[in-house]
Amino acid sequence: MLLKRFYLLVPLVIVMALSACKNDTKAIKQTEVSFKKEGELTIYKAADSTTTTLDIEIADTEFDRETGLMYRSSMEDKQGMLFVFDNEQPRYFYMKNTQIPLDIIYIGANKKIVSFQKNAKPFDESSLPSNKPAQYVLEVNAGLVDSWNVRVGDSIAFR
Picture: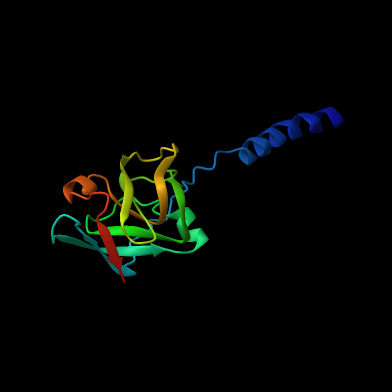
């Protein structure tokens, strides 16, 4: 009698164990982060009077600066993110969790462009240094530094 109950319980225990181990097929989906205009920035050419104006998001808190443009799938050509730091010093950026290629423009405390890194590759964690002290950093879509003919010595203004 005891053996008969054992043989009846074994399949039940196996079925329960297998159902407890079933694969959970729920997909985790990243929330899309959308652009939020917080100001405007103009690049002034040192060589002539041409300007380029774009809408910007401002990253001026530690969390915003650490997150930057991560987890975004696109950005318009007349949009960018301006990172504002409390002081001027050498800066190092990287592309962790950043899905779109970017040009990174480093700007001194006097709001003049000191250097840039063109065509930063998505998800690349290599260091992208400013090579000179910078207090501001502007990220725009890759290719725009060349398209806008941005040069070291050009200046910016933002509001």
